[in-house]
Amino acid sequence: MKDVNQKRLNQEKIVSHLNLNKNLRVNLEIFDQIDSTNSYLLKKEQSINTLNICVAEMQTKGKGRSGKIWESPKNSNIYLSIGTLLNKDISELDGFSILIALNICRALKNIYKIRAKVKWPNDLYLKGKKFGGILIETKVVNNKLALVIGIGLNVFMKSNEFIDQEWTSLHIENPLLKINRDLLISEIISEISKDLPIFLKKGFKFYKRDFEKLNILKNKKVIVSNYPSSNCIALDVNDDGSLNLLVDEIKRKVSSGEVSLKIQK
Ligand code: BTN
Image 1 (cartoon, helix red, strand yellow):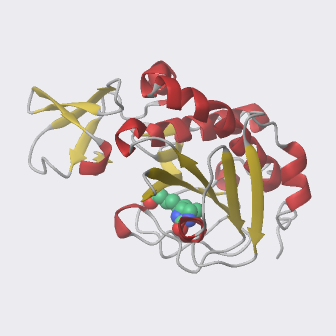
Image 2 (image 1 turned 45 degrees about the vertical axis):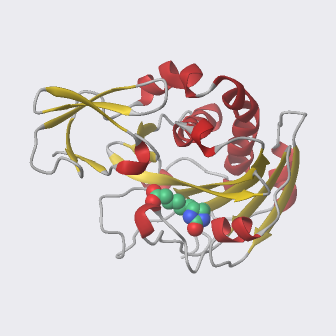
């Protein structure tokens, strides 16, 4: 049976809700089906002060982190990528995925009062289960950095036999809420457009306190790929977005590219 909440994505509605930083231009493309919104924008030419947005109803080769597949069934979720060109080096983007996670949490709180949390460095959680993820990809073009921010959020999905970890969706956790994907996409883009210029000037340090309020790993026992047979406890984050851990009682620092991490049950 078709869910009453489930409407097709509507370009005009997304654009009409946008509340953007006025120094940025936006181009929006919506596809019924695409291999991956990230792959599409990585191939497309990016420009300074422009956000190229690609949204799809379905992805045939949705990409997750660490080479995993991102399950992307039709009409049920948000598959959103935002591309731009920066006069920056990749080293200046430390902690950037955490900023995007914060923007998504803010968007959900602003329009639906949903209080999502962040699992460092780029997973979105509700009631202890993952409902969204972020995949940042970059490439160097003529000494500039083409940046693609990929966001996958489970919105209406109720079942999926292919996901190999505990997961949830906005609908599962809030069955009475009428979620409008157009509005949510608009709000996420608007939040990112406001924070992107600030992040590029001030770095992650400026957002560290906000993140700590949403950090679900803090003081939790974790299983860490780099230290598989040690007792690890996650602590806070540093100004560069790296995470402090207590590994067998010794304080160590790990950065997002080098580690994968699970909460111990
Ligand atoms: C993760 O593994 O948690 C990151 C998932 C990122 C999925 C999104 S969906 C939109 C964009 N296009 C992709 O192919 N992947 C990202």
